[in-house]
Amino acid sequence: MKIVVGNHKAYLDSDTMDKFLLDIGALNSNNVIICPSFIYLDRFKDKNILLGSQTVSNYEIKATTGELSAEQLKSAGVDFSIVGHSERRQLLHESIDDTNIKIKQLLKNKMIPILCIGETKEEKDKGITKDIITKELDGAFKELSLELIEKVIIAYEPIWAIGTGITPTNDEIEDVVKYIRDYLNDSYRVANIILYGGSVNSANIDELNKLSIIDGYLIGGASTKADEFKEIINKCK
Ligand code: PGA
Image (cartoon, rainbow, N blue to C red; front, side, top):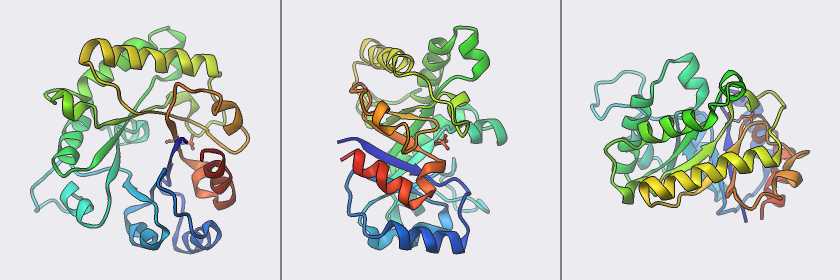
């Protein structure tokens, strides 16, 4: 069984969300985590799946207009949160220190962070993917105990594969994920859950499922199409 995380980003509006919920039906899956926009979290209450958010506030203080704290999310039934997504790092200039703070806020509230790491196309071409990943892991895990580090789910998401329809070959994914596993074991003595993300869809899921080194997927676009997402879920049982 693989873990399937759906990252809805800002794709759905009220009407398309109604249709999604109708088409997706009763999921009842303990390996599926859906991360809808904050405003739609409540609509998943009866789906019997796990709920995630797409980000979380850096702040604990309550006078933070427009923010949603880990404490608030937890009290709304959210147990997971994506952190360090490349879209937020690129568009909103979130830094690795921000990611570190968010991870701490989540863990403090007994939530599980889903940490996104991965290289750009330029970094891949320069052959520095593993350096980038090492830096991202060390930055995200700063000042955390090993016990807490091990709770973090890691999503290896090559930035050039996100939303592009291009996926790395299985050998390429295996090479990087093996590096992540070895690095975590050698430097931290931990063994984390590791997902792959970036243009996962119903057409490539069979090929990706051949990879035993990954524990599941972080899926953007395809997770907002009910039929396609159901097909992926069925293939990950
Ligand atoms: P994608 O997005 O599946 O649309 O490529 C993945 C992600 O951003 O997590």
